Length: 331
Ligand code: HEC
Ligand SMILES: [Cu+2]
Image (cartoon, rainbow, N blue to C red):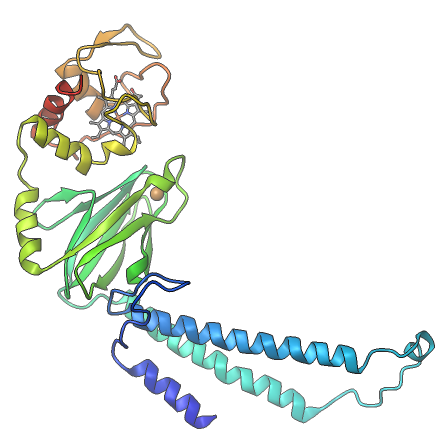
């Protein structure tokens, strides 16, 4: 028993055990961060302990049910037991589980501290949740709805929300943190291999919660650096506008193929006459589109809810001009 316990402690103290499942397992996707190994190890430790205890308890129960069943109704009504207390037994079943409880706490708390303590000098990225998309802002001002990070570097996400509770979850990294309106929260990870991994909202936040999907793109440092350079440039062309449309998450609520989603489709919008819940109709021109992006509540298109968030301070004038050029091409 003692030796087993010491082995468990030794295993827990090792730095980053080899990421546990190297492939997607029945329970969890492949582990791709430095702390994922510890999380999985603890998970399986608790899981197998619980499984063993369940089997033992059920087996004992079945055995006693059979062994001590009443032979007849009259026998059942005549209590025959003489013993009602067994000190050895009681101490055994209190002390033995205590070792396991202490181990759960020890490894759990150790893992918790590790997950809550970003290493010094971690690269910081701001994350903003908004119904129903994510936006990631890097040091140089680059803003995107997909998270790019360098491989083998600690990254700290500083998380906030514009509207309601959201939650950042990156299953492959085994990290998760709520995005709370009005305050900052954070989490950190260090990705161990390049690739693309899902990032999703895991706090129910309204109609399109399940569309609040993004991904983490883990790249080499040089690829990441050139991504940062590219990312801040905006071409004032239809192609540039299409990129803005994708990056700023407009596609969560709008389409370009004519089918309505949360908001109207952009197909055929340019130059058409728009009618509103109140006020007189206008033709969709540059000013109307700019106003729709910066002050979406000013005119509410007939048949749609007033649920578009403002993009004031989040899209630049160049980006709006590029978007307008893009909308012009969607006949
Ligand atoms: C959360 C969902 C949502 C997001 C995200 C969103 N919109 Fe909207 N948008 C709407 C809704 C709903 C309407 C219709 C109601 C209204 O007029 O405000 C609308 C209306 C518009 C209109 C007027 C459309 C028309 O048919 O007259 C424009 C232009 C527009 N959005 C542009 C954008 C752009 C550009 C983005 C990305 C930067 C964006 N929207 C992001 C929900 C959204
Ligand atoms: Cu959400």
